[in-house]
Image (cartoon, rainbow, N blue to C red):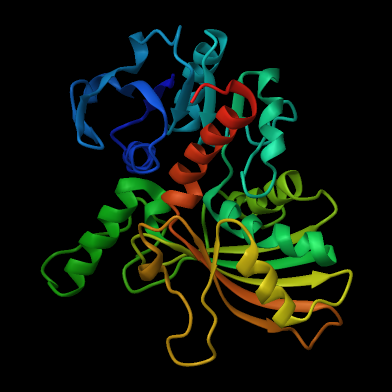
Length: 340
């Protein structure tokens, strides 16, 4: 006996990936529904070898459905997630709406799987921000060994994190560089993204940080340990898919780089590719379509007593969004619902 699953926002980048990953991982599905806005009604999407026609989110009845994976913005989620949850369907939400609600668990299954059991507070589980998800997968096993005091992270985030509009803008501006007759001014991003980097993701806050940077701080504390100090600089780069992060970690105890490498090799969800030679590391192009979070460039930081540096790369549409949501559904099934 399997589950009745709903994918909300099935025509978007993350919704497509959710359907792909559910099929790839052979999630025990008895019935599946693909939902979208009325303007996309009837659009065909793929679920393995099956073609689904999208149904209207506005009129859909969630009664009798087990799990709904939401991949729509916060505004729409605010309207429809409570409706689904009230009908008895467990919502796994990819937006930022519920991440900081103390009654809603924020879950990365490799890090805090036990947190799914708190779902019953509101019948909702939150999926973290894409940049946070991959980082905490690497932090948790190291924290368990040597206790992290402080993290300094700089991100290099792909345009797919801004949705299809972001990907289209990079593509169109790149073509326009080679065709001076055509001009593609910034629309989705604040400045030209082609052949450029932009140190600005989401809105600015009063203290000068951006909301993306604040998210990494707040979410790391909620998922891993509230005592960890985090400071982040989040940068948009001209890469289509795959987020990268340069992470500096300060520990309470000394942790040798070789031991850290061994710990990470054994940790769930991580692939260590760390050879001190040309090409002996992973780049975002190489991680696209993969489930793993890739760790490279592990080395001591000699400027502090107990410091390490590492390079962290992951497919943001997968581990940063769709994969993590499906893994939450799997964890919920194994620990609580126990149908499949």
